Image 1 (cartoon, one colour):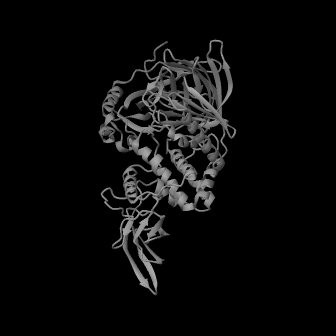
Image 2 (cartoon, rainbow, N blue to C red; image 1 turned 120 degrees about the vertical axis):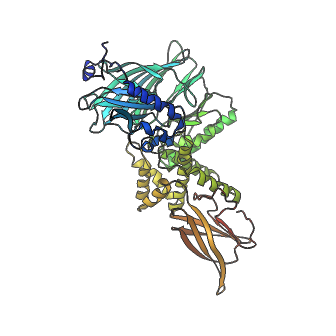
Image 3 (tube, rainbow, N blue to C red; image 1 turned 60 degrees about the vertical axis):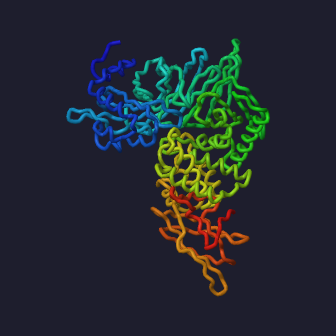
Length: 623
């Protein structure tokens, strides 16, 4: 192939062959070598000498990762119709499913220098999206590799703003062919996970990508002797937007393959291999493929086929228990959210270095010992499956999954109220763990701070909302989120807020602003508490003070007497909220939020719970 001596020209595109990679200018190489050496610090200020403008703003994404193994590489794109040649820096690493992605930054030339410019966020589609994948997958367990063929459907979702399509595909995979359905070669450029190619002229096109490779990553994506799991960018994606899937996989003799949706074809081949075709008509953001030599258990309950694909040793009673739990929560969620959309559900166990558990909507993958997360993962059929989440803006669906798990468990067994010491420990943990990021921040499941607010605070905010509007209303909010969702689109917290407003007929912007867009939690304490006897009545009065920017929150207040209790509610709104109640006897103690459902915080230095007040002579009392 003839070598282009400058940045690749438009003629290369018209020839329909893959362009030769342009030689990287020495100044770009030098810049990225210097940046690469500093990335492990995760400190944007160290990159200031190499950045155009505010490095803190340019590299804001560093606050959402804790990984030290980021690297920098160049990406050079040719001049195309309407655009000049472009230079980019790609900051890359292996990124697991539902975590950060590689970061693409423009390079700018100013006064003879090359500097790192604005990021083109992964949310930028340039007006294109992939709506369907028709895939073939053939694993080779001897070489621990996989061969893929993907006929994917590319559509113009809006007026295109670029003649190039920016997709992502895991760097572990080598492309051997990229053509249209007539067999015409499509030129492309790759750096790390970035896969870029000229946009077809048609509004809707089918393109064929053939690629292969071997994966072996901690926590995700590996091929072992007896099993494999694929989770992360093993198919081309744009902005992680939802798409449907039809996948045909041929499993070696003794292995069972599984992916999303229904099995529409199943045949055993003369050589003992098994070919399965799966169809998933619900557009989803993330695809998972599992295959292994499983111990398979099957039961059918309430019209749903339930399977356990297990690798380890489990007693029959334990396996039955896993499937019974799956059946109960499938029925409960199907009744209270929306009907379960599949005919089967599978619990899959892996013995590899898997990171916890991962939903698959018609199945879920669990590391050894993680099957206790069954309810959480099953709830993702609705939150992440029927209503998808990209994790590029927030991980609202993890909040919903944790909340749904709690909601289901409370129907099975009434929870035991926490002790005073437990409450204080909880409040300290809330104040500490939720002080870094707001709930409405990009979701990265490999980042502790993101997980804390995504799984923890977000689910507790949903419980606060339940206390605010009632459980019946919160279930209608969940149902409305599903009913008003447009298939093929991804949802965000704004959709949840809109559903709350529809159900209640009120504007809950104040609620979502304070709970999702701020860091931290409300910290309350008592002040000026006293009892008075007036006209034969006993009156308890005082104030509740807030530290920091005030929250608007209705908090239960429990008054303890010698042999009984009395519960009231206080609508806390400003820095100081007065309360006054008539009681039948002298109280011994007051406690705000006695069940710990309202997400109140406490200073880390506190030795006593600031939400507890004991009158003179009053002792610790538990509910």
